[in-house]
Amino acid sequence: MRYLTWVVTISIAMLAALVGVRFATAHRFASENSGFQGLAVNAPVDIVFLGSSHTRQAYDARLMEQKTGKKIFLVAYAGLDPVTMLPIVQHLSQAKERPRLLVVEVYSAMFGRKHAVDDSRVFFEAPPELKKRLLREYVEPPRSVDKLMDGFALLANRNNEAIVAYPLYRALLPNLSYHGAYEGKFVTGLTAEQFRALRVPLQGDLRVDPEQRVAFREIVRICRMVNMPVVFVETPMPKTVADLQVMRGLKEDTRQALAEEKVTYLDGDQNFPLDDPSLFADSNHLSTKGRAVFTERVAEWLMAQPR
Image (cartoon, rainbow, N blue to C red; front, top):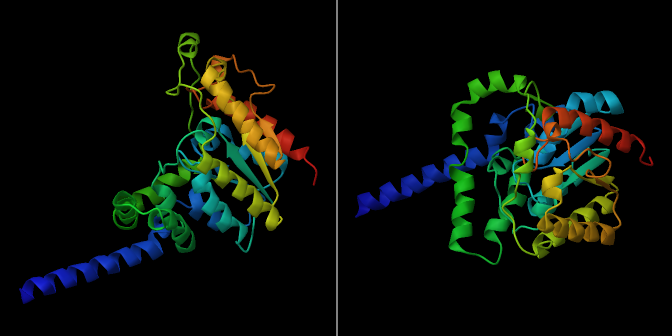
């Protein structure tokens, strides 16, 4: 029995030590050309774009810098919603070198869904102080076994392959990203037939989720409190998707939430050729051609904003 007790004690101690080291150092194994580590390495940055895969596929970083004359960086993770954006904005607001402008992605379908973390790299690549903020949702009330287990998985075993394969990532990633945006990746547009067949896995009369709404309001409040300029941009959707009743309802409710907070907002659908299949890669992402068109439009819009 004493032997078993020692084995369990030593195992727990070793696991705690490994988790502690991983907590403190995992972000060092992340790319220096994307995500939080990339932002830290490239600081100071004039404009930070924060969002999901929509943001990553919506902007050509080099073209945006050419058009604005500003240094930019994209912090983009798959499925990033307002609830997860909130601790990130809190972290940015307390940074020594805050961005001179924060561009936050608006995606009506994301505003309308229940909160979920789709990309574990958000936690893995975060510096320790941000990790603490991100962990709160797993340990604060209402508590559950599932939430605690998800938090433990993030702490102990998610993305360990990135540590093992770090030398390979270190060699390859600089060629794949530039300031958080795609580099050298060509995304083809849709055919007319593919465009007509586009659908989304959403149904019914959906509205902005209350938890997402609260997080969005808090993001606005924090930015105003620390005088960090923030604007909100919604990327274009293909006309066949934008015209769906469920998407129209979500967008109208999202626009109402934006109007209530009196924020600066660019609706990417406006004056964008939504009926051109070549500008879209799927039901909600832009092609390389569409990215170039939208980047120029957003650059012009940003430069026209009051200083």
